[in-house]
Amino acid sequence: DSGVTQTPKHLITATGQRVTLRCSPRSGDLSVYWYQQSLDQGLQFLIQYYNGEERAKGNILERFSAQQFPDLHSELNLSSLELGDSALYFCASSRDGAAYNEQFFGPGTRLTVL
Amino acid sequence: GDSVTQMEGPVTLSEEAFLTINCTYTATGYPSLFWYVQYPGEGLQLLLKATKADDKGSNKGFEATYRKETTSFHLEKGSVQVSDSAVYFCALRGFNAGGTSYGKLTFGQGTILTVHP
Image (tube, rainbow over the protein chains, first blue to last red):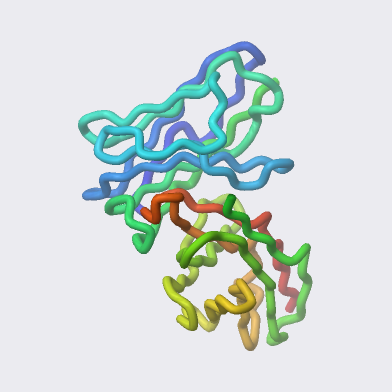
């Protein structure tokens, strides 16, 4: 158990819908990262937050947004969903954003868009 | 931009065989290098890491050496077990143009390892 929790574990929805994925980092970790794992794109970095502020952005679509709240949990919002958004979404956390700090991964949320 | 290339899989071995999974990278400066493992139905776990050239990361019998001259970080294990069956990802954390490290991990495509008794 990494100490990072993600809810829900599974999510099935229809095209055009909007969903929210939730992540709670390990106690004391200030930085949260979101990654998408799909068969065709592999594991890709989406976005990073540090202590409530956006720190870095990767290949995140405009239909997707995220935020980190004062209690440090984070939410990833996916809207106008398409079939291609079906993937495993991982959240990771680290003490801060330093390159040498380990990122601890949650178990992931599997999103299926029908 | 940064990139990581892993050997194509899947890899199938018998128990106690020697394992090598190749990983090469492209990045500016001196990135930190990682191997992560993903067991079925679980998230990624850090297996080992190296933060500078010639560093050797090791854990649970797995080893990898940071080779800057060949931009490689190959994963090895002398004797695999059935319990090592998983997907292995090579990854790096690099630097932006200003030389500041940033948090994101860039992953290779993953290598599926299956070990038979």
